[in-house]
Image 1 (cartoon, rainbow, N blue to C red):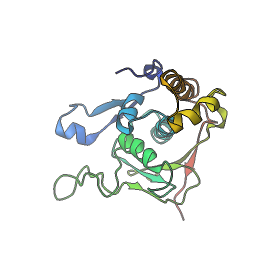
Image 2 (cartoon, rainbow, N blue to C red):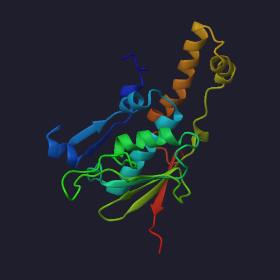
Image 3 (tube, rainbow, N blue to C red):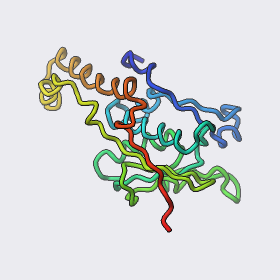
Image 4 (cartoon, rainbow, N blue to C red):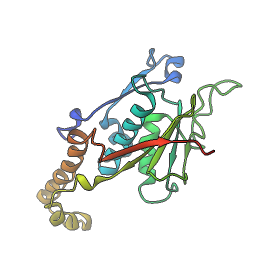
Length: 208
């Protein structure tokens, strides 16, 4: 695939999925996701896709430290309702990386519903951030938010964006628009992946 050159430089996310191990593919259950996987699933690359990818990555680090995160072992909470704004895109990336799914998810195996993923993704949650993760085994949670003001789009984008959106850009202008658009995504994923100002995280305590 002719993805932009920066894609391989974006951080990867490695988890262990007990369901994958149970069913033997991969046998170890260890799965590594790349930013390209998120792009393939959503069908595009933008600050929302990149930002969600980095928020989940940061959340997993907060919850698991040096442990290998468990895919399917956490619940995901989104602040907005599913039909609002870019919530659907955020949910799609979060589902890919965490395994958490809404009512349409995998119902589990056997009478005790082992490895169930259904009902682990929630919308309209009472959180201050964009999304939150909570471990199912120990209840530890983290709230995450994205602030892209420190990684602004290139100034030239303002010239090409209106024409591209209106479908009035010629082939050269459209190609240049795409390069400008991806340049911001590239900076988020390569220069600011560990930037605490871009991805903010704080402990999420259970309600008393």
